[in-house]
Every structure is written in structure tokens, then in C-alpha cells.
Length: 415
Length: 120
Image (cartoon, rainbow over all chains, first blue to last red):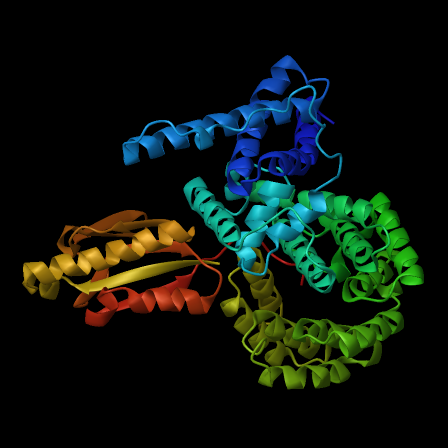
């Protein structure tokens, strides 16, 4: 790893701890979060030249506290100017901890901060942006680059989210028990969305987006360390590791997509597959079942097959049946249909797709047309398959997917 | 999800509009831009010069043929574009429906293509 990569890892790991310490000392989540962001930027500029300080957290806390003090002071001065009044003792800036004072609580606020970022009052896009900044320690510029929007847009999105949290009256406390499991589910979903944003990035100018997948895996790993017995946390981490293991096989050098069945499997990352499989195997044995574990188990069955033709479709179908029974969702039905077609023939798969045409959540989705195209092609209906592929190609907003679908349609044209 | 809003105007009708009405229309659009900037959804936007300043370029057999005027002969011409990033198509449609030009002429909402792709 390069030293710059190491510095980045240190910084990102410290971000939530430093913020937790500041908020516990001074309150004002919003102002503290800005101060920590400034400290992280200062560290990213100074550490590569000056070296990583002996106590990175101490350095960041000191710098962030100074920034916070400056911000509070200039705010107070501005208020005084606006109100034309003289100094008020309650405007006194927070002062750094004195040697005699109790040291900051040595607790890790990472999970509390993650739950805060996934507050139900926030929209999914705000949760994602805030999680990456507050828990992930990414800068606004990095997040903006990953989501391909101007920095000002992302800055505004983050500041709007923070003021919404302020309005909701946030504290650094764990939500009470009944809410806690909902909040964990929301947090895992946010990590899953971040992973997908990065995983779907293929090549070229969008490599920065691919970093998001790595960051999602890192954050899921942090949550797993804090909640080692939670089966769904393990399941999500396993799922990400197993899917990410296929990264170098899933796109050609020109960025074109290669479907699972045609991937060069020796390119799959064996260490990632081993880690993911071990995690999901262990959690299936010891924790209550959940949707991420089942999806990870399916990914593990795919990963175990040395060739596509070795895939244990019976096991995959059984896992999808379990998933559909307890956590039904049209995307699951779609994938279930593909597996059933592999096991029992394309007609059986097409039959499973039928109810989806009346399901508003997916009826107009290009993936339904694409799967129908695949199954019709397997069934030998070239004309039907071709028209489904073209319909899917017209509906997708993804350039590589459109190219892939047009390619499938072109293969079925004429002779 | 990023959407482009294509704003169409009838240039003659816009010119014929009483000035206070024209200003009100532009102020209304400006207020939406401010709102979207505040919510972190605004990406960018530009107004276009009068269609008579357009130049249409066609290259046939390597030879460019240049004509003055817009590509499409229509009463309504593209007058501006906005790009915003919002969570749902419903939200984007709501923004489009509030755009003042939609009351007089029409605005067109188009999702942007992107370079990401999922395994099929």
C-alpha cells in the first residue's frame, strides 16, 4: 500500500471517533462535523509531508477543536455585529480539555453516528452522502466526484441533511431498542446502496466511483467488528465480498459487460471468495436467517462453481424460494425465474415472470425485459427474444447495459 | 437520478409578452433554481440565445454544409436547459410541472444516460 493510501485509511478510520469525542464535549453536531471535516482536509494536506503524528486522533481532535473555536467565535462576532450589542459571556468559545479534566470517554461512537446518518427524516440520497462524510471520513469533494455532481450541489445536500437532523433534535445516544433494529436495517441498506453505486461503475473516467464499493466494504467491516454476532451484518459483508470478487471478470477492457455465465472465472478473487463464503457459512449456522445472508449464500454457490456449467442450480433455486417466501420482492422473483429456467427449462422461468407484468414496481423496468429476452432466447424464440432485448435497450439509462442488450439483439438478427 | 429539462419557447410569443409578464416568468424560473440549489439537487443550467443566432451544420461526404437557423423548423424552439439530480421521476416531474414555460409552451424531461452498468 502506498503511504498516501495508508494516510487515507488512518484518516477515514479516525473520522467518526474524533467527531464523537467533539460532540460529547461540546454538543453542536453540525458545527463539530464541519470542524472535523476541516481537520481531515488539513491532515490530508500536511501528513504526507510531515508524517503521520504519533497520536493521529489527538492531532485531529486538537485541530478540529481549534476550528470549532474559531467558527463559534466568528459566529458570535457576526451575531453581535448584526444585533449591535457588546460581548456576551455566554458567547465564550468552547475551550479545549484541560490536563486536569476527565479524558474524553473512550467509547466508539461509530455505530451511533451511522444510525444518526440513517435517520428516518432523511432521504436515501442524504443518508448516503452524510454516511460517507460523517462515518466514512470522505471529503465533500470526493463524494461529489463519486456521484458526478458539482461540489456545491453535494455540499448543499449535506448541509441540508445536517440541519434537518438538528431540527429533529439529535443526540449522541443509541436509539431505543424497538427502533434500533429498524435503524440497523436502514444503515445496512445505505451501505448496500453505496456498494452498488461503486460496483456498477465499470471503467474509464468513473473509476473514482469504484472506490465507493471499497468504502462500503470497509464500513460494513467496521460494523461487523462492532456487531460480530449480527447475522445480517455478516451477511451483507459476505455478499459484498463475494460480488466484489468478480470485479475484474465482469467487464472487458473496453468497459463492455460480461454476464456471469461468460466470465473468465480464474480472474475471480479467491481470497475475497474464501472470506465471504466463510462469513456467510458461519452466520447461517449461528444467527437467525435474513435476506442478506440468503443472497450471500446464493453468491457463494455461484462462486463455488469452477465453470458456469458446474453451478448447483437446485441449491440456488431452493435459496431463492426461501428468500421469496420470507422477503418477497420483484427483483428476487426476477432472479428466481432465471435460476428456475436453468434448472427446469426456460418455460418454467417465463411462467414465474408472468405476474411481474402486472406489478407496478417492475413492469416497466428494463431488467424484466432483459430477463424475458434471455429466457425466450433459451427457448429458441429468436424473434421474441430480439424484441425484448431491444425494448430493454430502449429503457435502460446505462450506456454499457444498452450496448450489451443491443449486442444480444444483433446476434439474433437475420440468419 | 439525473434529469435534463429541455425548455421550449415560442420566441415570437415570448417577445410579444408584456414586459412585466416576461420578467415575472423569469423570476419564477429563478426561484425554482434557488430552491433546487438549496436542496442540493441543482447541477447546472443555461439559457440559449435567440434561435435566429443558431447555425446548423451537416457534414456529407466529408463536406460541411452550414445553414443559418435551427435544425428543426418549428414554432417552438429550445430556449434553455437545466440539469438536476433528484431522487425520483415523480419529483423531477413535479419540478417540470412548475416550470413557468410549461404553462405557455412545453418543457421536456429526459433522464441522462450514465456509464455504470449492472451484471446481466
